[in-house]
Image (cartoon, rainbow, N blue to C red; front, top):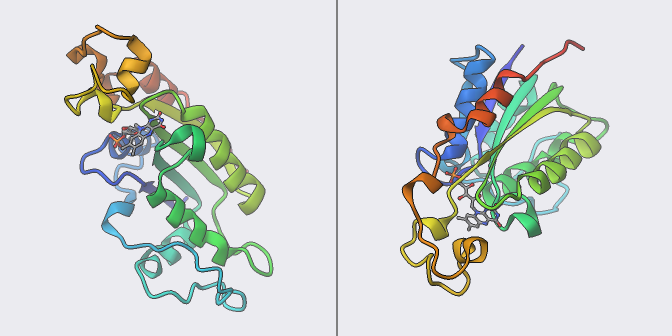
Length: 208
Ligand SMILES: Cc1cc2nc3c(=O)[nH]c(=O)nc-3n(C[C@H](O)[C@H](O)[C@H](O)COP(=O)(O)O)c2cc1C
């Protein structure tokens, strides 16, 4: 089975990157290619319909360098950070990437992809919303089954920005209230999130 990982995090060594790697390793795909969207310039779909006849986007950007890999993959582990999760579910980098999949949807579906595993990192508990939006994207628009969602906790910027204990719009303040202190144990790295590791071990890929 052709397997790829994709990370939609704009940050270096991010939690999303780590989660995608852990899932691939658990599936014994240690050497699977991981596409890091932060290294690519992928513009939004222009709605020009230039892809209608060829199923290939006419824009000249880095989409062209990943299009064939995506088309050929049978299983994808997609890593996504929840940015403005309650409103949008996913971040803009991931959104641009997925919007360009429009080119695969003319005169039938032009994809080998059968299964997706979602690797979602959310700082403020919006992972389920992200999972719901992405399930709709894959299953309703692309006929691809989402076989599992692995949702991990990420670090909300308000916990590390230096103003989180007092800032009026701080997610930390909102959650813990005035007077609470940010402590190191509130930030748990992905590999130490035991329920996440257990859920990764439970991933089952049934044939068909
Ligand atoms: C611009 C921005 C907006 C964010 N909005 C949300 C949000 O609405 N809900 C949420 O759960 N986490 C939110 N977060 C926290 C991210 O989910 C978390 O920092 C990220 O997923 C950590 O992953 P990373 O280490 O791969 O960057 C936001 C982070 C940023 C930078």
